Length: 173
Ligand code: FEO
Image 1: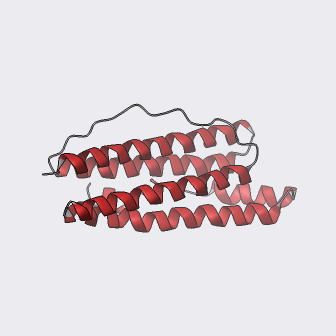
Image 2 (image 1 turned 30 degrees about the vertical axis):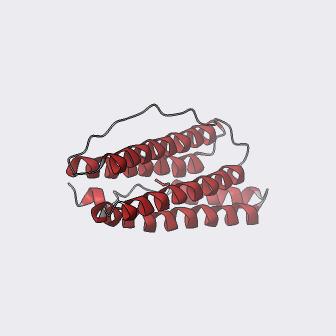
Image 3 (image 1 turned 60 degrees about the vertical axis):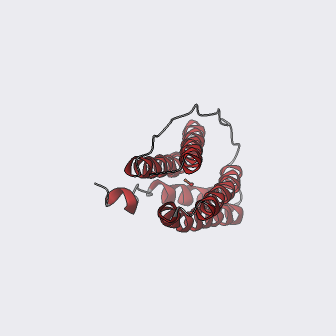
């Protein structure tokens, strides 16, 4: 059984993951409108990953006999002028999410809820990947600058990104 404190904190994190999903969907539509379909694809996959993160937490709350409460999702920005702007915003956002996960981990420890702490280990590793991939794309777009051929090639590369079901959901099926 989850304590009310942990249940509330995970419900807040579910809302944060769904807000992240909404943010990346907004980025996807922004780049779709600019005719950059590869970048739009990358953000659409990111949108699906964030939905999956929310689902992992939802499954966990249910497994522990808690109650998932879905709260309203705040509005997100709608315009990013360049891919570099969007990937910088992505990195800044993921750093905030990392801090949220770390806070949740510290709360689970202080509440002596070791099952929740264990569940969070997957998210801690995931955040390393999230920050790394955003930084990698910032580096690539910075390097390319306004080079048309470079931008075309990178758009093609991002068009190839596919969604892989995260392991906590794959094993739950
Ligand atoms: Fe769910 Fe991008 O962290």
